[in-house]
Amino acid sequence: MSETTLPVTATASAQSGTVVAESATVRGRRARIALRTLQVVLALFYAVASALPKLIAHPSASEGFAEMGWGDAGMYTIGVLELAGAVALLIPVLQSVSAMALSALMVGAFVVQVSVFDGENAATPLILIVPLALIAWARRDQNARLLGLVRRRA
Image 1 (cartoon, rainbow, N blue to C red):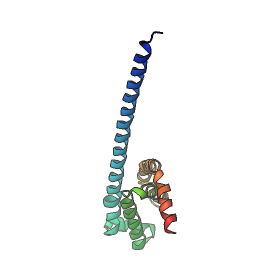
Image 2: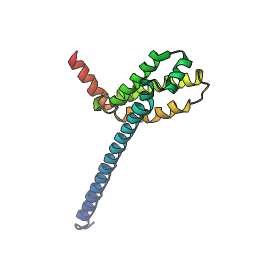
Image 3: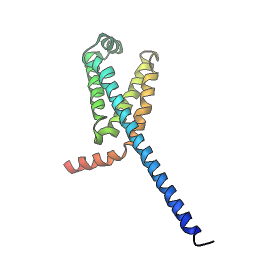
Image 4: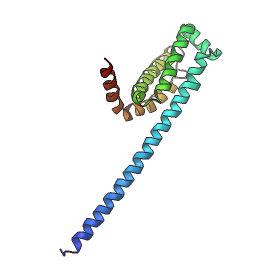
């Protein structure tokens, strides 16, 4: 091997490492933007399309909760939980916990859809669990931060 070959190989390797690092940075930035966009879209969905009809006692929501036997109290409770989850999806330290809580709420919605409404809209809660699980997993590092804040206050 000649002396001139070694620096050229090292330079090429260093340059390709830089390209790989820049590519990973761009991908990471795009992934963060996509995840944040998903969180905003889900927060808007839960606040406007799901919680709002319950909180303003829209006839479609009132009828559904009356059919379940939960009445207005159940409707308002679920509406408040959905609205709180939507807001928490936008707060960095609460994002993962909120996604897990909304997923649990969607499991309950699935059970109700199957048992009370004969599975009429049972796919909707299951579909919503997928992006919520992605958010919970991707933002899982925030759980340690939240736990630290809670322990510090106790």
